[in-house]
Amino acid sequence: MQLNTHRKRPFGSIFGRSLIQIFMISWTLMLLLPIFWLLYSSFKTSSAIRANTFAFPKVIAWENYDFSSLSDVGLTIGIYYRNSIIISVVSLFILIFISLIASYSIAKLKFPGKNVIMIIFIALLGIPVHAILIPLYYQMLSYGLLDKYLGVILPYIALFSPFTILLLQAYFREFPNELIDAAKIDGCGNLRTFFSIVLPISKGAVSSVLIINFINIWNEFLFALVVMTNNNAKTLPVGLMGFKGTYAIEWGPLFATLVITIIPTIIIYFIFHRNIIQGITTGAIKG
Amino acid sequence: MLKVGEFIDYYNLVGFMSKRINRNNFVNYITGYSFVIPPLIFVVLFIMVPVFKSFYLSFTSWRGLGEPSFTGLRNYINLFTKDPAFYIALKNSLLFQFGATAGTILVGLILALLIDLKIRFWRFYRFVFFLPVVLSTIAIGFMWQKVFDPYGLLNTILEALTLDRFAIIWLGQSQWLAMGIIVFVTIWQYSGFPMLFFLAGLQNIDPEIYEAARIDGASTIKRIIHVSIPLLKNVFSVIIVLQLIFSFKVFGIVWVMTQGGPANLTEVLGTHLYKVAFTGQSFGYGSVIAVLIFIVSMIYAYLYTRISGYKNTLK
Image (cartoon, rainbow over all chains, first blue to last red; front, top):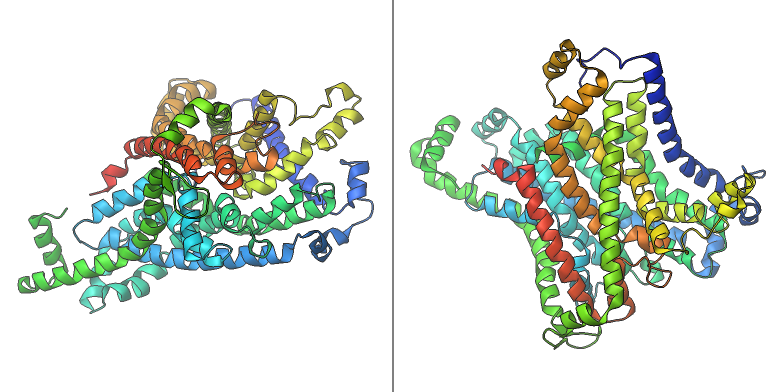
């Protein structure tokens, strides 16, 4: 996203500008210092944290990151991590695939009733998980999908597809018709036109929705909390709640687990922040 | 809906012969439908059917085993007349909703206006200010809970500064303080989100308007108040509704920081529903809260479509 570069003239006096910088630096510190505290505390032993929560680690406590010791108290971080990765990847793959084709169809193909379909997706955009939590639980119970990957993957696809489709169809709507028509004259069917002409040019939009959805699914909590109750089925955010119980006193391993929970999204944000920022703003403003 | 004229234009453009129109039409319909059907099946099965089922369950008593038995309006009557925790939850939900919406939007607006002044390092600031949004609310909630823990970071700092008397049990003392802290953490994490919206809105303002303001001798502060903010009117209405929708769904941050406690004082609708249905096994009763949340959310969603102009794009 580019900001308006027309206004080159900087704001007012040196005094005014310094004041703004001080404010911006304060908010930056406000945001980064707690995360930094979390990061360095994760290398302190629990007793060192108890002794002084503020101090830097004197000895690096790598043992916090040895999560196998936590399995004695029923916290299987490795399994939570594996579950989170499998659930995120599989849901993302199906979600993006069906959303891409549907968005293309809504944006570029002509068929009666597609406005109605669009209105359905828009209406579903605002539905909170709470409103469907109990019946979905009931449904998963009767399908035998409680504590199964599919038990969260299927609802995740449903929950995140309205937003994904709205964003993608807004993008495809602006895709030049000439390219599509040229491909059709050359005898390409709809699917082939889409995969060989439209998709390669749309990498930016696709990566935006991929990343935003990955972050949403990776962080999703409430539904996973309800469906994944068996310890071997829990995702990371749900598994984290295990630290609330008897193990509450051990801050070192807790902080290490928090760090490995937020690291994947931080890395993705570092690499793709442009896509994320662009995706969110187009999705909401342009519709 | 398609009009006859549109058909003819479309096919002239593509260059198909007129006698092929009907056949192509048919093929287009079939592909069109088959492309949108997969996600439709998902939302029907996992969103729409459950929503209707929520309504049904709210008129029944179901304890998680066997079949739900019909009880009429009893759940609704109980909720409104016999459940003091519900009123606390409703009050806290509204408190949180307005606190978080106002807070994130105010902070987000200030950050966006300052970044838009093209001060030094603005790209870095924009990067950092949005960063917390992508982090897990549960992880962030745990982090802040340890900051506000009786033996946590804040009290350690206060003691180091010999301000011991201000070192209190932050999250376990009063309803207002605990809710205030939860709102604060939400502002801390999510003000980058409205910031992005305001930045996009500011970017869309015609530079010539600014130029005119400058020629008229308006200072930067005056320009912000009299030009930028009024021109952000549409962004305001969209982001206000969006933040109201988001904050009404609050669950994770409350669940991880206080679990609704101490003694229901920080209960919100989401945590109350979870406790009633999944801890107390009263699924029918919990569904009443679900129905309430659904109705309110639909009102917001309707407002959102009206404001954001989705209808105009449906042509």
